Image (tube, rainbow, N blue to C red; front, side, top):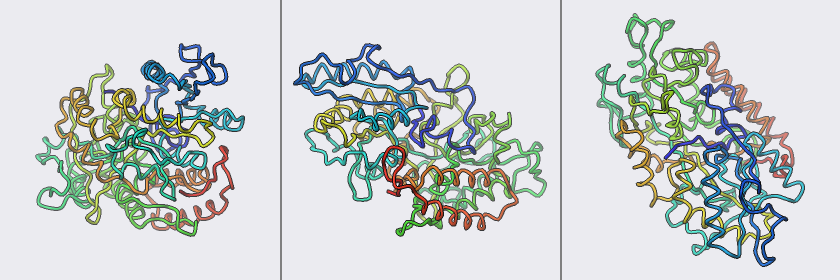
Length: 490
């Protein structure tokens, strides 16, 4: 099973990395997208079918999230062929759109009245962008069987009224990636692999994580960050980092899930988020146990690769990060294992990204579109989770999927961390859409850059400014976004 980073945030490549200027995306990993139409051997495009008029045409668009990589194209084509062979009264066509252009292509098709019936896989951000154009689902179990998908994994795809706007095919939980070689050399045990376990005689919480991180942060002389002889100007090993989870909303949710939108529509900064931002800023700039933005861009940390460089003891990241833990020849690295996320005030949160399939309200054949969704979540699901690389949303498929992962990453022993982390999803999702989303996201990006780029700031004062600015931005929310969907909070 090949893990891929789902691309579903703010229309940016590979899960929103390009829209986050404070994230260092690994070099040499450009993604390839293509536009697939009938010329690649699929059924004719909508409006060009030679099928009987009794056959209903359903169009499935891929590109807003994962699924557009060249290696994923043929397997998806095969799923379409199998569906059409087994459903003579429904004719499914597949459009795979280059990811960078996917939002614009979809917006144009919506404006022209040629919108697809099905979108997917998409992420929670895309659901927020198009939510007023997505069909609320009340699945008939005989058509879409959700009996093997936990309610907590459906929460992020529900709107403010509780209506389900899509069905998840895959999940990407988060946890700690642990460099076992660093821990062994330091004479420290690996952090807990079960929630609720203590570590070194204390609760496994954020204070313990900080203390452990400082012990594992070393300078060129081998002194750790707790020693008076430690030289912060010559750090060669860091104790902890957010691995592509350093966006402010992701960071805040590391402590606890929350919402930036108050009931009256103004901005609110969750207390746990403000605390986490100050905690991580201190870890970078005072404790020197987490790399700053400048340090992450050095050769020592793989020019943005971070944990993959072997010079970070622990990193908080998602399952999709596994796809980057390979050497230049594609061979899996062997220096790491997994551990559970520490608790904050007695509670644990694991950010969970998702691959979701949705139906547009404009579909002239919503019933048949739901038949397709039922097929994708049902018969096609085992193949789709191999194509896209998530942990299956269906709990009955997880053991087999994890076994495939274990076969690829033989040094990893603690696979239960992956599935156990699904029990603590971020609700509300850290990816929920904000009012006036583009401006809000840009302001958050500026704040994230400030945290990782400057040590001489008053974080509490900057949080006050952020809340004030977001309130102003929210108040200027347009009545509709480019897709015709109101830019208000979920």
